[in-house]
Length: 103
Image (cartoon, rainbow, N blue to C red; front, side, top):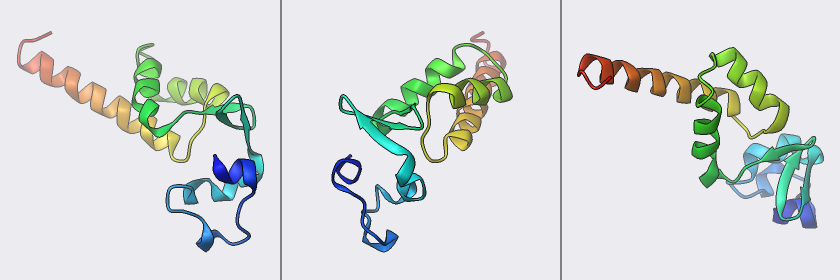
């Protein structure tokens, strides 16, 4: 949030490791009420992303619908990959429960 409020370094190599994934989109990132947004899409804090992914998955949509729904309201670097991994992990857990008789 510091870079958004106070300005980004001119060169990416001067950006902190945590902020580097955002550097390419730096001109599209804003802050409002202590939250980060990219093109009016919320950028949830890293520690909240598993919860966000869980909420998206709770709708039991397919991967394409999950990604489309998420793209309308949230963003972070690598969100598509995270959605795919979340869906794959949930399906794997469901299969394990079925095999073990926990369904």
